[in-house]
Image (tube, rainbow, N blue to C red; front, side, top):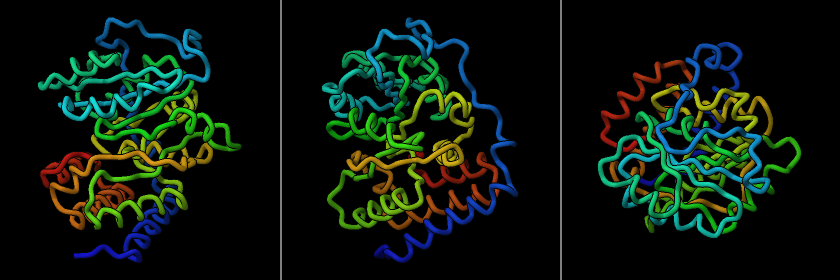
Length: 286
C-alpha cells in the first residue's frame, strides 16, 4: 500500500499542533521523573568535568548507546576515524555478542550501563569531556565532515541544538517517501528524532537535566524541551540509518505504529504502556 505525501504531512502537522496545544495544559515535563544520571560509571576512566581542556576546543563527545550491536558498530565507528577533536563513548547495555570488545578494538571508550537508551545516553554524557554532545544510534552512520557541520550549526544565532537529515540504507522506493516525510517535518517543524543524531551544547543538556527517564520517547521529549529554550536546526548533510525496523513490520505498518505512539504520548498515555505495546509488535525500539 503506497504512502501518500498528504498523509505524512497531515500527521506531522497534527503532532506539532498537539504538542503546542497540550504543553501549557498537560505539562509532562513537570510530572516526569528526574533523569537517572549515574553517580559512578563502571569504567576505568574517571569522570571529568565539562571544563576539562585536555581536548582542543570545541571538541565533540559522541555517545553511542548499544546492545548487541557487534555487527553494526564497525561501519559506524569507521566513519568517525577522520573527524577532528572528537571522543567516542560506547555505552554497552549488557551485550552478549562482543559489542564492547569490538568498540574497544576500534579505539572507543567503553562503559557499562543498565539497559535502556535514555539511561545509557545519560551515563555516557556524564563522563563526556567536551562542550558539544552528539547522541548517535548504533545502527546509524554519520556523513563525511559531520564534525564541522555540527560546529557550524551550533554557531548560528538562537540555535541550541541540531540534527541531520535522514537517509535510510535501502533501495526500496517506499522508504524514499519515509525519508521525505521525516526531512520535511524536521525542516519545517524543527522536530528531529533520535535516529537523526541529535547534537547540542553540553551546558544546555545539563540545564535540561539530560534525557528524561522514560522507556521510550526520550528523544522526542528532549527535543520538545529544547524547542522551548531555542531553535533546533537541521544540518544539510544526512546520516544513513539501517532499514531493519521497516523490514520487520513493513513500511506502512511501521510508519503508522510510530505515529500512533507519538500521538498517544502527546495525549498522555503512560509511556510504559506504550513501550509494552511497542514491544508486543515485535520490532526494535525507535
